Amino acid sequence: MGKLKAIFTIPELRQKILLTLLFLAIYRIGYSIPLPFINQDVMNKSMGGGGLATVLQFVSMFSGGDLTRATVFGLGIMPYISASIIFQLLGAVYPPLERLQKEGESGRKKINEYTRYATVLICMFQAFMYVQYVMGEGMGWGLRDYNKWQYWMTMVVTMTGGTVFLMWLGEQIDEYGIGNGISLIIMAGIVARLPAATISIFFEGTTFKDSVFRLGGSGAQDISFEKLVVLVALFIAVVVAVIAITKGQRRIPTQSAKHVRGRRVFGGTRQYLPLKVNQAGVMPVIFASSLLVIPMFVFQALATTKPEWTWVGTLSDSFQRQGFLYTVLFIAMIYVFCYFWTAIIFNPKDMANNLKDYGSFIPGYRPGKRTADYLERVMMRITYVGAAFLAVVAVIPTLITSTMDVNYRVAEFYGGTGLLIVISVALDLVQKINSHLVMRNYPGLTED
Image 1 (cartoon, rainbow, N blue to C red):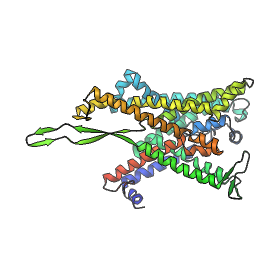
Image 2: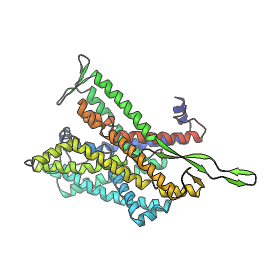
Image 3: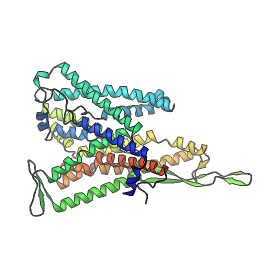
Image 4: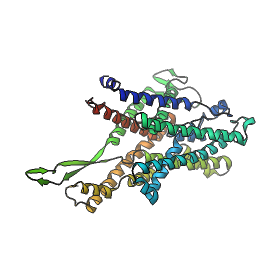
């Protein structure tokens, strides 16, 4: 308690935390504002089951929005993330953008400006497709008197404005609050789903009989006391493992060259070059999840329009229920994107040149090409371990659902993209708070 109390004794840090909480509260208020011209009651009832609703819930998990409810912030912050990813990838293959990235603060501002423009275009396209789906014939979600193009455009502009406002809100958190604004918005959207998942276990027609919590309603399942204990223990184990791997490093020893000036000897100290085991973070999982959504939609649409094609229905079920084919493709794409993303953000040649410029070297390896080759070889090996870790965590919800007969909405909090994002953002937030405390001679939150 003393450490938490110390946070609010620093005026600047207290102001940053309170402003961050205020911005997140504004996000949660806008999250519940419905779009006009849509029958929300009918839509909520239709989205209660599986099918396409499951896909929309899966996408909403890491977007900060909720596509199962037509709201102002329905698209979340995903269009901005997609635009940012596009420009990061283009910066590695498009020379003009690569030059802008190397121009420092002015180049970064220019790229951010391009990213905002791209966000508006992506958001307008996604909003139009979503409104077309919601207001489509046969759904019964759109009010008939308002199924005209001018009302469609009103909803498209409203959803686009909601995403742009979220983008602005994230930038305000970056500037005046604490932590990464976009990541905190996504984390808030994920954590907000936890109470509903908990309620679905304990409070939907729950009775206690013979040490069994019995879930009522359609598709009810019996969850024994032993199964609940296993779920709690598994959740704690996954959280500890994720923290350990996220903070895990491979430390490569380096040594600086000695310099003799007069009677004094400078340098010659031994240090460590830390290489993160999970260098790519959660981006490979987000990439793989985003791309696998496309065949989900395609197979779902084909299965609806072409019911006589039985093979399409089989593929649709495999993707909808995260079956064997989906899991294999998911793991393969996580590995591919892990190496791809690591190759973008980690340049062993530049790191070797920086070591050489500062007069440091890795014992046993010549500065320059030999050092770069060694760093690349080490990174390839630890990236394999990091990719395996991401793949295991990503498929844990599917394993829990299939082996323990637990609803996927509950199981997704025991692994997957959501848990990775929440823990990564929480660790980053604690690190930023620690930096403020240590700078003012207070002990950090994680210090004994």
